[in-house]
Length: 390
Image (tube, rainbow, N blue to C red; front, side):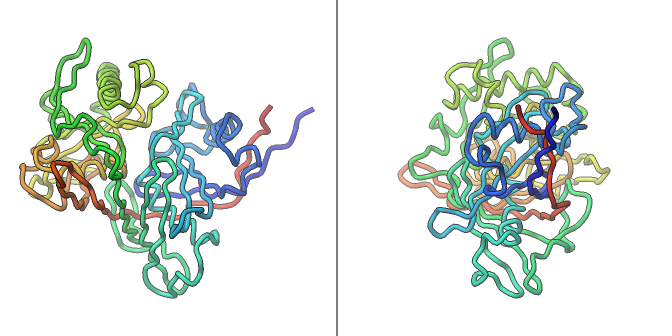
């Protein structure tokens, strides 16, 4: 006897250069409203993972790290916050969801979803203007503020803001990541702005390990045989290169204290990220757009879920902005080594500007705020259908 599929209210949204399936917490089946095996199995089935074909043909995922994502939102139980935001990075070919980090790109869509789903007090919403939506990011226990444009009492999604890595223009949504590192946390887990990364069988490299936004490992492109202007196919079609980066990422995770043994890295695919930097150089982006060295301060390429990202993860951009603001990091040195409060970097799809406020207190660096502009819109809303779990 076969059971009919579950019908679950859901919204398919783009946020920044990512997209994912958004759920209200109380719309999920009761068993899925709390962490555990049932919730993970349900969301894996929604996305269409694990898929040995790597296509997500039988699910809502897009078979890339940027499109294999899910979000659960509920009215916030935190003082002075509007919405709780829980993010799940879904593996494509494994039955695994990584809940260890945030998605900065999809954060741009959270405010709009919260407004349209009645999670924000109407008294705090202007008829015309900018609504400041205070988001509690549950994965990393941090505050994000989304500045959502409102026109005639409705979320404005269309506009002329262009974001490299996104085909069409839309309304600009400014995002502030407030104190991405708590006072009790170390910006640099090793205590150094530049350290060494020893990778068995590969070599020893200079590295900057930073926790802002998302745990990230930065290395110099030249030290690992690259220019910093690579596009996706240059890396993602090279199996040996991908294995090398994953090994470096695993050893970096160990150095950062995120795992206790190299074997644990496989179960922590979303964090840390690994990225490589170089001084500003000219190149042609994946869309054919010329990026001139005068437009940017440096080049950055980052990997997510084992593949070179087509643009830049929002959380990694927070790490880039934070590291650029602190003298002596590899990011800061690649950008010229000067003091700065903002940085514009080149990525495979084009460029991105990030502002960061950092200050040193008694020999310890603190990040006050990191800001960037993204865009977001609803792609589809209704009910996602999922076969009942046995």
